[in-house]
Length: 200
Image (cartoon, one colour):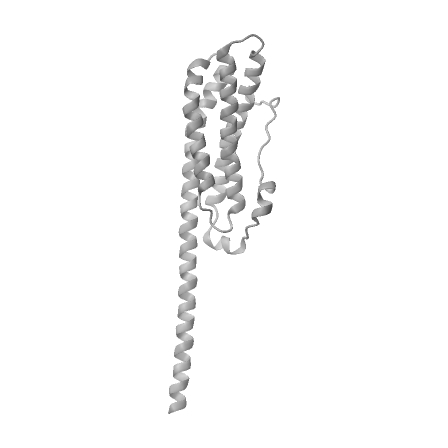
């Protein structure tokens, strides 16, 4: 009788241990799922804000480069766009990245930062164009051309990366590992040459 009671006690302890282990794994999976969904939602919102800020400027910049737009009004609006892009990049950098998504997060941040640099280059080009000093037209056009291309490509690339992030499922993160030190150098990005303009 005592042996049977002891055996049942052992079985009960084993069952409780298995239950607690399963509960712990479920709680880890739920936390990972919530973290992933939060990050997916944030990156989608940031990409949408980037496009909403950059796309109208790209359209107007194309018009200015074809000599049909108003560089002065765009130059006046540019500081606000630059501030908006900096805020987007800051949010992207400060986001809590789920374990296993560091590479995609780094690539996304690279594109947000590239949009900021592109807007600064565009601002320089617009200032030079509005100043209308002799000999600066070529400098202005070069800055506008490179800035516009980089702004366009940063927007396209960020949308593509967000789609990749959206395709990740919580279970996928179990097989991924983050190698933070090697990430930055291996992040794919576009390098835009000012002479390669397919949108002229």
